[in-house]
Length: 160
Image (tube, rainbow, N blue to C red; front, side):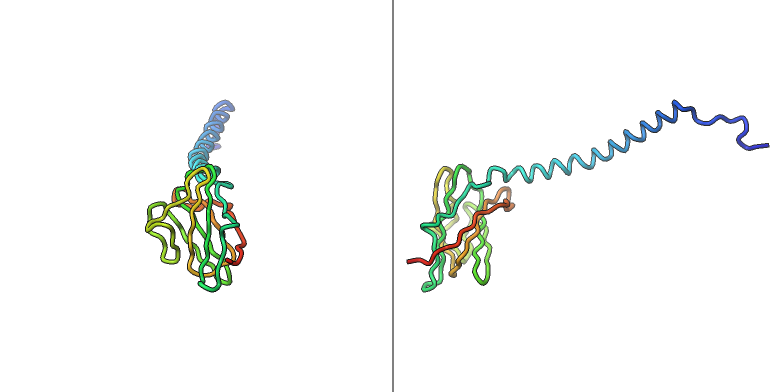
């Protein structure tokens, strides 16, 4: 006597319903994982969209001096409210600085006040003097404490 004799298998309708339920459950799990990940990625990248081409290094007023070993950088804001800037000064070595409005200047940078002030929206300019003679400056916007990609660069001239 066969153990399964007289027993019927799962009907086609029940099998189809079970497969559909299994598929929907798998889709639900993927959605629960992927949607928050994609939303966070989009938020992070969207924060910097308005920062593209929003500042410039004023080439005519920026220069470096070998005699007193400093670099003068003038940064101009376009149509964006700036929360923070990052400046990378490059030559045979490079140094990186983050300037946040209202904070103290790093020891290697001086400005027109004791605390950091950033260029104002709509064409405001600020002068920064960096200790050391650097021939290349890279500057970019900071949003929510993070550096936005696509900074501006300038090869500086020797101060006259």
